[in-house]
Length: 120
Image 1 (cartoon, rainbow, N blue to C red):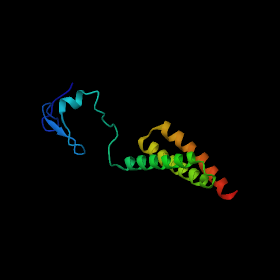
Image 2: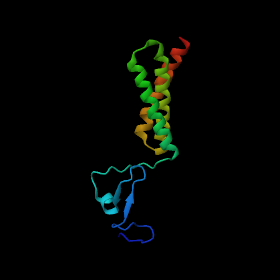
Image 3: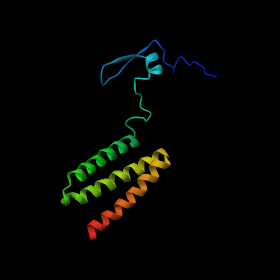
Image 4: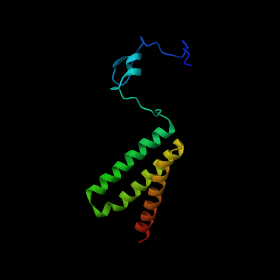
């Protein structure tokens, strides 16, 4: 049974303003829209910062890899390891076993490659 709490529920006729863009949306439009993308993860929490930092680091690693400069290979491996490790932390924080498993194994493999690069 769904109950209506006037102190916490929004009135469907109310208007919400997107602070970043200045666009106005009716509450009913946001609740029923298929064209307005709503994020499912909260913003500006610890996991949000780790997730975005890890993503940016992985993008830098791929950019270095795609440049194909052999002298930068160690930076590619290091940044890939760091990004994977950060995503493993996100998987742990979210209790998401798929993200945790994938990135933990990836970080372990990249770490062994990093050790080989340093000590070879």
